[in-house]
Length: 454
Ligand code: TYD
Ligand code: MG
Figure 1 (cartoon, rainbow, N blue to C red):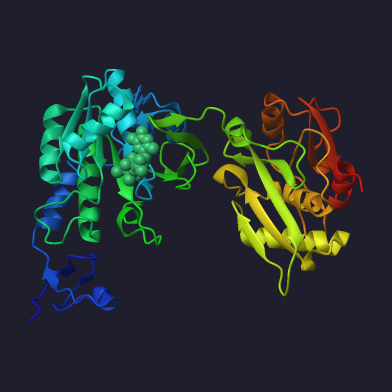
Figure 2 (figure 1 turned 180 degrees about the vertical axis):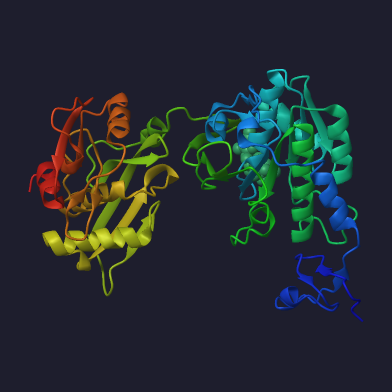
């Protein structure tokens, strides 16, 4: 019988009910989990401890301590964090298993410890010996780096309080558990509760904390996703498994912008920072090949030059094939349709394959014009004239529209030795000095005439 005033909670998903029984939320997925009566006093007790003597203060009276940030020594990570890691902050790093999260945080720990800041690296998945093997592969380990192979969160808290490190790394949040909870490590209730406890620990002790969270293949982010609202910063570490480059992207940041990206390359000896990603992505570009163009993609304040390739070839029968790697499939199909309708390229009889070289991704419409030019170049089997970068958004009428960040894009192109750029005419201001020769166009017709000489 349900008692008056009691609350029942599912240990698995946290569903709260006023009556005992099975959890309706879990039952829907075929798990008949019993609701457990919430212990009286836990909720109240917790509330009291999180807010010791809290009282409203005037905003103007709130003091911000200077020097709150610590540079990690890994420049690309510092950039994404917004200039180093903030004291007492909780940072979640999510990503596919095997993408390099442990490697990244281990290297960061080493770099921090090298700078004299004590770091506690808690490994819940690998034994101390395994971590040591990785460390040996990456080079010598500094004295201020402490290792703890532990999954019991209460132990981790105790060690953190006694060691007082500058930075704590918990690898991973799915591996740690609180013995008080009945559910298994990695379950939603464990992840949520452990995340909450680590947040309190970070705020109370001022230890900056990094949490590793695995994202499952299906995109069911049961683990890390439940923490996103709680933590200060969420970073995702992404990349194609078969390509060596990795991108670190902020999706939430209470202490900085979410536009910045960090680029790394996975090497034999760990992750190397890629200071000049454009150079990296263009390193294998063929010269004078039809269907290959260089486009500019702006990620935050960082312009990336990428090689976009299109292969157009006669379709053998039926519906022509469209295969798109590295950009949005629907966008690519739309642009091919614009090329067909506006300029009469008979693409309905042609297969088209689109690829961004190096396993990179373009998420910006600024690559539109590049795709159109590359498709036309491949169809005509004629390479694009000159050593140039192409960018501009293309509309359904075949018009070329202005894009943001003209100057940053041009500067990057000039820095990499490009002779010129084709840009939207509407982006050009009369008389503005430009770092390289620029050709403004208003339509795809114009662009193709200039670049392919039709
Ligand atoms: P890891 O950091 O363990 O991934 P995660 O913690 O995200 O699961 O990295 C796993 C992969 O990285 C592994 O397949 C091997 C590769 N790797 C290298 O290529 N070079 C290296 O120096 C290291 C340490 C790992
Ligand atoms: Mg790992």
